[in-house]
Length: 136
Ligand SMILES: [Zn+2]
Ligand SMILES: [Zn+2]
Image (cartoon, rainbow, N blue to C red; front, side, top):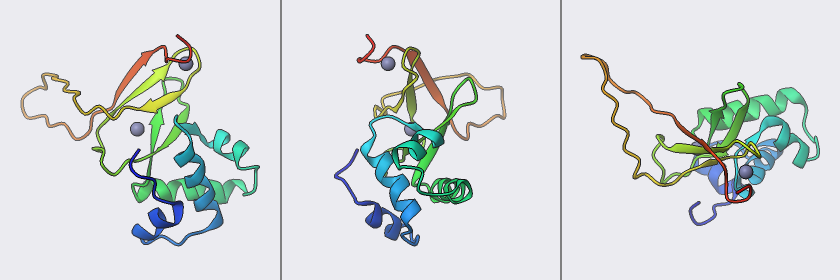
């Protein structure tokens, strides 16, 4: 994570109004080392906002490229802050024991997959499943 920008700074740099819900969601994700589900963010923020406000906030932040979603095998969706230095293409580590997901900053990843002629990669989503340092 880069030198910490405040949630207000992030919102204003994306020309978004700084609402209480947007700030709360951003602050929780900025503080968390791992990706969080909508429910986890709700729980830590004390259920201050109604479901629709919360849902719209996540959509707005995702559309602005401030956060991104990670979809797990079981269709669970987690959200993480998008590091501006990071490529939009980066890999994730999923711990099979505690179910935590982390963005990996190592852009050394170089996956070579032979595509059929005429096919072009638009995005690549790499999920490494394993055991994290806390569970190991
Ligand atoms: Zn773990
Ligand atoms: Zn990520």
